[in-house]
Amino acid sequence: FLCAEILFNPALIGKQEVDGLPSLVHESVTSLGMAEGDGSVKVEEMMRNYMILNGGNTMFPGMAERLQHDLLKHYGMTATIQVPPARKYNAWIGGSMLSSLSTFRDLVVTKQGYDEVGPTRVHYHCF
Image (cartoon, rainbow, N blue to C red; front, top):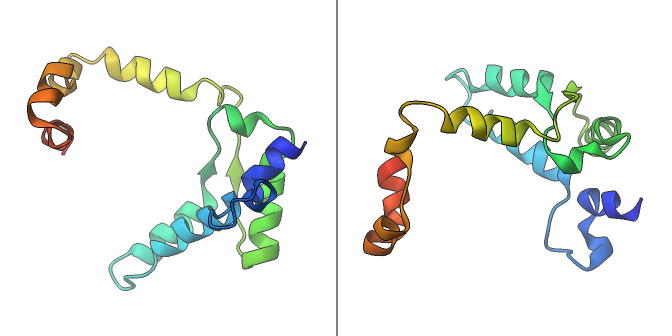
């Protein structure tokens, strides 16, 4: 189980400068409440109450429980974490849905377009 432990404690493989998953989640959620008075505190609360784990790395047994435990232990943060049964494939499902949209071709960045303009081509198409 050392493989999954690295997600929570990257120092195990000599990555002291990299934060573990609980720290990254805590930092992401609490950064939403920095501008109080504009509704961001509500957003922070919603984020804590509705976290969803997705992707193949979340398939490790006990992943949600461990994340909940570490958030509470290290940050005093309670969180409701959901684990959809198909989470291993959700990124592929979402990509499939996106590619089936009639507007998808307008979002595509071709290699030729990227080579002509560079990374700003992505910003032009997506933002």
